[in-house]
Structure formats: C-alpha cells, structure tokens
Length: 177
Length: 177
Image 1 (tube, rainbow over the protein chains, first blue to last red):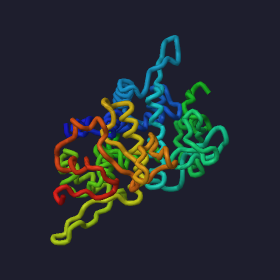
Image 2 (image 1 turned 90 degrees about the vertical axis):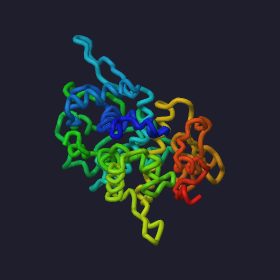
Image 3 (image 1 turned 90 degrees about the horizontal axis):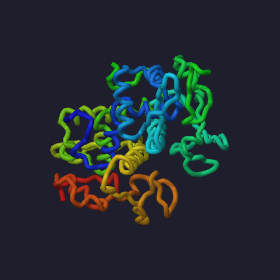
Image 4 (image 1 turned 135 degrees about the vertical axis):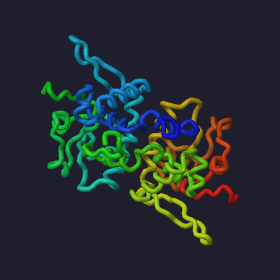
C-alpha cells in the first residue's frame, strides 16, 4: 500500500484530508465545481481526463461527502454534481494553493481574478477583501479572466462559458446559452 | 500522460501548484518540514515511506524551490532539508487542508493543537489569532499534542520528539536530545 491512496500510519488531519482530496485530479474537479461546472460531460470537456478517471473521482468525492448528486433535468432524469457544505469549506485551501502557484510556479500573471462581488475589490492572497475586511465566502466572489489570460484561454465551450464574469457556485451550462 | 504528474492542458495556478506539491506524500513531507523534521532518516522514520519515494520527492521539492539542502554536520558533511521562503508560504493552504480534514474526515478531535506563541491562544480555522487578530506566521506558532492524541501517538523517536511543545520551523533532532 506504499503508493496506495491512504496514509494509514499517519495520524494527522492533513493525511485524512489528502485521503479525500489528494488523489490526482480531485482538487481540480473540486475547483471546477466552485467555478460552476456540474455536468459530467462538462467536467470531461474542461479537464481533458479519461472518462474512467473522472467517474472514479466523482464517485469518491460523493462517497466522502464533498460533492452530492443533484438532478438538473427531469425527462429523462440527469444528475449533476454540486458541492456540499463540507465541500464548500475547501475554498480557502484551494484558493491558497492557487495563489501560491501563481506567485511561485506560474509565469505571466494571473489567469483568473477573484473579487468581492459586493464591492468589486480584488481578494488578497488569503482570500479576504482588503476593502471590507474578513474572509469572503465563495458565493460572494466573482471570477473573471485576468490580464494575462487573453491568448491562452482554452477554447472548449466550458472554458468559454467560464470566461464570462460570474459568481462562484453559480451553475454554468454552456450549451444552454 | 493522462495519469502523469503534470496538468499540461490546465492553464490555472492551482494546476501549477499541484504539479509541485500534488504528488502523493509531497504535502506530508512539507508538513514535516514545518514541524522541524530536516534529516533524511527522520523523514523516513516519521513517514514510513519507501526510501526511493522519499528520495524522489525531496529532489523534486528542492528542484521546485520549496526545500533547500543545508548542512547540519561538518565532519563528515551531512545535509538536511529546510523550507525556502516560497516553501514557507505553503503554511496557509496546508493548515487549511488539515483543519478541513479535522472537521470533515477525522474522528476523536484534534491530534495537534497550534497556538500563537506570543499569547498562547489557539489559532482559528484560517490560521489567525483570535486574540491578537491577523494571520500568524509559522515561526510564531507553537505546536503540541491535542487532547485526543494521548493513546494514539506513534512511538518512533521522531514522533516522540515532535510531541514536545515547540515552535514550527525549529529544527528537531531526536537522537541529539
């Protein structure tokens, strides 16, 4: 089990968290759910991952209580995946990791800019609003492409839909536009 | 490369961060470095991972500028691994993920309690001091076993040394005690 998915000998909350979200692609799926992606085929188009991997990760995230299935169409019934309240609590570490990646592992400035929807101020590195003070909950955050995104945006329909300024957690359905 | 170590098609700072610290065990190695572990054999004893995996992860973290090698003995020369300033910036997302794991994926309460060294107040869920206000830098944080750690502490020498209250980033050398 040395390279399995658990950390049985590590009695630590970080190990428990990584057993839930530490597998390859899992945090990018959760990120996409914050951005409003919710349908299986939209995750597939946006993430470019094998269908079997996506299926496995979504099932694991549902089993762990990070995502839940929710119908988005009734005839025939189709289910999407939305963040639970526990899943929404992952915003702070995901935002922190992304900010770290922007400062330390990226070039060319931010691809995406996150702002406090109420006042339009760009969030600081720990996800707080410098104008209003305090952490901003994801549903009160607006995302839009940053100044360096212009030439590099992916051209799949999901990426184009996500490039329009919108609130986090607002469901995005590209082909319904 | 679908299950490789990069996310070439994901133009996102989170993907860049995960390329650096998203491999299995990497974040637990970085966590140990915050706790004061710095010698190869101490990481090995504390993490229970194969030697080859530890070697590979340490090399990758040095190459990415998260850790740097530093001599801790001169005759013969021996090197340990300490966090760079970029590596230290990972404290906030690591703490956030661990807090999430404690709330959502653990049982029995916190194994480790983190406090603001200056006033002794336990940190809040985003790593700030509720008494003094503001985020607390890792070098100003004291760690000690939480109330639920008693019966579950690992008994290797590194775990025993880490169980004594101490500041983060203070190097721990078990057999020198």
